[in-house]
Length: 177
Figure 1: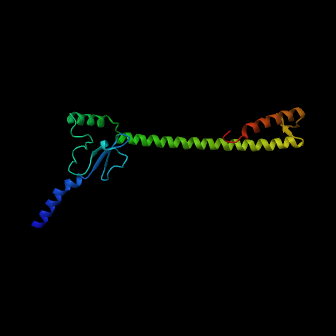
Figure 2: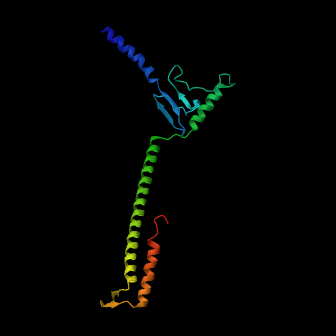
Figure 3: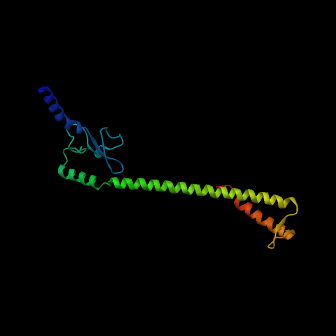
């Protein structure tokens, strides 16, 4: 029983040392990062706020100890760290929502463009087939307002051919052009 108490006491005393084995630094975006792993090599030493070891509570100083006013330089470093932009959890959630909304909007725009391209391709195909009929020389008839069949004369054929040529010129362009 005494051995169990001694073991528990030893573990309780060792626990704070495990908790201090944390790295803390400011990333390139100005956010504080906490990790049990050291920061990536591209993080400058002045951005490392905490590292495991005997100096775990104090920020790592990169300036020499012979600086004239170390208290002033420490307060300067604290001010610069405090003035760095920090994103709260709500800001991160807002950023995620904004990214999702932009992605949804881009997807909707892409679908609309595909729908327009499909409609233009259909219009192009119909106009080409109709123009082929007009160019073949066969007699073409239409229903007039009274519901009677009437055949197109040369002027009406020329007018309709010109209209179809305009549709072809407009709708049969490549998608990028």
